[in-house]
Length: 117
Image 1: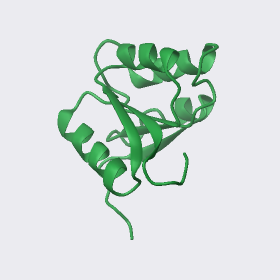
Image 2: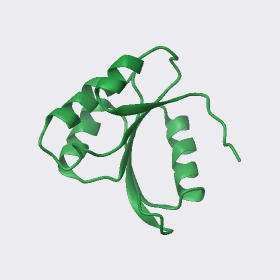
Image 3: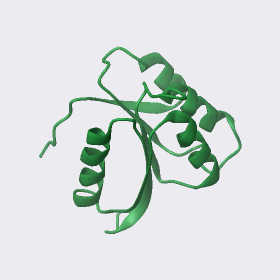
Image 4: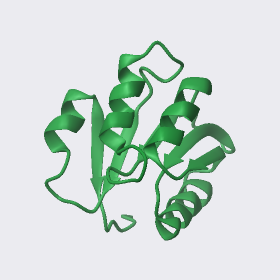
């Protein structure tokens, strides 16, 4: 992501409204991300990722319509603007998705998380 203030474009794929607000606030205030797009399920996330380029994609695993791992596999397996974009999975399920995330070149952040100084 571009280090200049007000730069960068992030896609959040998360079905929990509270978590969306926490992530949006953190990205806006702490990282000064210029544009944040939000969708609430994996199917919409895949559609958006196939249509628009992003600097970073953040996704939950368990969501309606399509889970996050299936969405990421679709992004990585297709010729699209985000095939090589960094993807971070944000999940509260500690053992879920670790091996699959590694195979899909995605990183995992476990919920709950706290700001570190």
